[in-house]
Image (cartoon, rainbow, N blue to C red; front, side, top):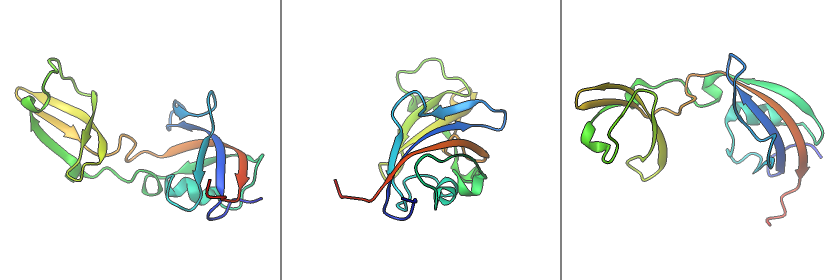
Length: 146
């Protein structure tokens, strides 16, 4: 069976950055399982899965515009140190989970610390990055609504 809208896809993946560093992978655990065509994965990867079938192995390069988007400067913010209660030593590069104005969970990254002001980036940590995937399609099944 080939991958098309509505199919349940099970796949192993390895995600690398441009230097070849593995960022995330399923290869040592359970495969990623999702319903194809629902936006469950980034658009560039979903597009390259179309028409593939179980047993296929391939690589995919996903540009930022089809991945997590370009870095949006509007998503940088300056917060007061008091917003980080219970954390004494805040350094650039630290990441925290926060909620946006709609209550959705998001990762924020500390970009700079100056006295009582902390500059954070609310872009996805992989925004602006070209992503490199190695994919192994484990199975493709019709959705049985189970």
